[in-house]
Length: 443
Image 1 (cartoon, rainbow, N blue to C red):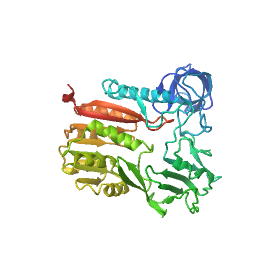
Image 2 (cartoon, helix red, strand yellow):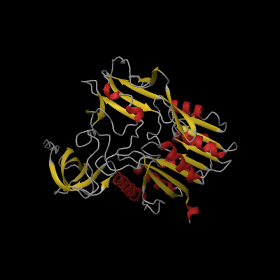
Image 3 (cartoon, rainbow, N blue to C red):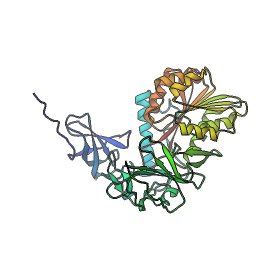
């Protein structure tokens, strides 16, 4: 006998009381029947009318948007961005919350993840519970920091207009301006051009130089447009077969400035998006590690060598740093950026593969800045076996950080301090720096 098809609940509306914030830019509520709702565009304590956007009868949870606010929170403001709201641009999560409230919500998410996944209270993690704004970002409610130095625009196939994706959707929200885009991105005028034939356009405005870059991803068989923007810009394209990035004209890299050094970042490679982020994170890592002259260090997932350079500068001519990075172009850039440090070496490959092959059995300091998924149990166990006196873990995802901190505890390390930084205002993302040391030293 064929089972009855499960009924979709998309479009159903529920009047609900909003509970705590959850990881991912939404809050938790329950229907009268007890089904969990993850509701966007709301705040804890509010009463709202929630309309289901994803889910079906019997599902573990439903996704929903708050389409009417019946009892607002004192932390609610009118969203400054005209493209924010239910069914609109998915780039920001907290446009409707006061800046201080956004940081409190992020702090609550970090605390919840630490407790649930690592069994740590904020006190046990050496964290005061605050999420610090970047320098210059503490603005009044209704004002938005222009921080995003890299913006990935999606292109509407029918109109050729660049916009931003709607939440969990391939649909394009047409915009005339992104409020969180850095001035160097906005001044290019991407939104005012015809991008017919392109899948996406990424705009990059480097920090500390005037370098501007656009990276075009064409649709299959499409020809590149003549790129004429409002400011001088280098143009790169993504190859539809290989996925490689190739120069069309101008430099194949941008020059980013941090920690008193210039870093070459090629082919749209990873660099912190907030203009203050690189310096903020280097300062937090170095204050936590307190490098000493002549020590040895690892910089894992090292990108173009930001932390490796900072370490080498402080460890002196008798110190040594090994960086490991999987991206081929990033390794080339790191070797270029660190060429003036003879005792720095950068190896290409996945950390879990390269690190065992190095034969390293002990090291003084470790920095790791893994991708969103975290380092994982195996890599953490290997790092814990090296006996480092201090480890700095830079994390863009509090859940992955908490999981890995639990693994470090299994390996004999405790969290000495944790600091959190709001380097992604208006979104749910947050950056953390945890400093670890051998547990016996903390007794």
